[in-house]
Image 1: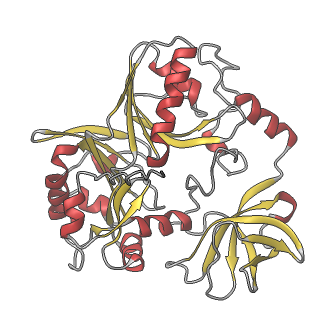
Image 2 (image 1 turned 45 degrees about the vertical axis):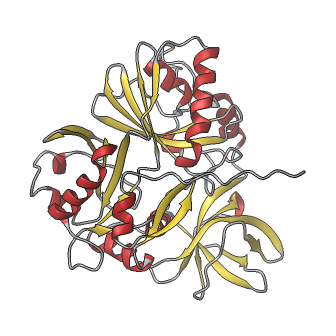
Length: 383
C-alpha cells in the first residue's frame, strides 16, 4: 500500500502577521512563507529606486561563530580573507566546494577578535551547517557554531532617501562606510546595523531579536515611512521587487548565477576571492576550493557572466539558449523587463569569445528568437 507524506508546514518569520495585516501576497520561498508583493512588484521596485523600501529578509540564515578557532575556520571555508578583518567590518564571500563550485554566497560580520556572524541564503542554511560540522570535525577545530535564524529577525531598508530618514534619529549610522556595522541598543533591544544591501541602492540591513519583530517593524515605519498605499518615503516591499532590483544591479542570485556547478570566477566575483590566500601568511591557511580556482584562473574561463539588452518588450527566462546565428554560445541565468530602464535585460553565461560589449547575439524564446546586445554589468547604477 502506497504511503503519502504530509506536506511540511511553511516557516514564518517574526513579521508574518505584519505581512498579512498589510496585504502581502504570500508565497513559498525556500520553505518560508514570504511576501512576493503588497500589491504591485513594479510599484515597489520604483519605490525603492526613487525613495526607499523595507524588506523582511528574516528567512536568510544567521549563524554565529565564537571561540579559539572561529576565525581560522572561517578563513578555511570562505574565499575572502577573514584574518585581516577588523571588528565592525563585514565582507561578502563565497563558500566553495572542492571543485571550485559555489556552495553559497555569504556575508561575514566580525564582532570581536573571536566572534563572527555569517548571513547565508535560506535554501543553503542546512546544507552549510552540515558542511561546517564536517570540516570542524575533520580538522579538529575548536569553536562554537549557533544557528540563530529562528531566534532573530532581519530587515533591509534600501533606497536613496533611507540615510536621510535614519539621520533624524541616529547620527552614527549615516556615517558608516559601506560594509561596516555598529551594534546599538534601542531601549531593551540590541540591533546590529550594517551599511549593506542587495538592491544597488544605499541603505542598511538590521539584525535583532525575533520576539520584537512586529514592534520593530512598526517602529521603523513610523519613524521612516508608512504602510503600503500611504504617501511616505519608506514602504514595505516584497521579494518580487528585491529580485528585479538585484538583477538591474547585476548581483548574483544563488540557483541562477551561482550554483555548486558554477565557479565564482566565471560569475565575475573575483573581488570576493583571494586566490593567493596563505601565500604571504601560512597562519591563515588555504580555503576549500582554492586549488581548483587557481587552476581555472590559469587555464582561463570558457564562459563568463554577461549582461544582455534585449530588443522588444518580451523578457527571456532562465535556461533559454543564447545564440550566435545558429550556434549555441550560452544560456540565460536571470532575466526581466527592467522597470527602471524600460526594456528587457538578462544575465547569461556566454562563451568568452562572444562576450565582448557591443556584440550582437540572439536569445531563443521558444517559437521565435530576439536580438540581444552584450552590455556591461551592472545594468543600473545609482546617480
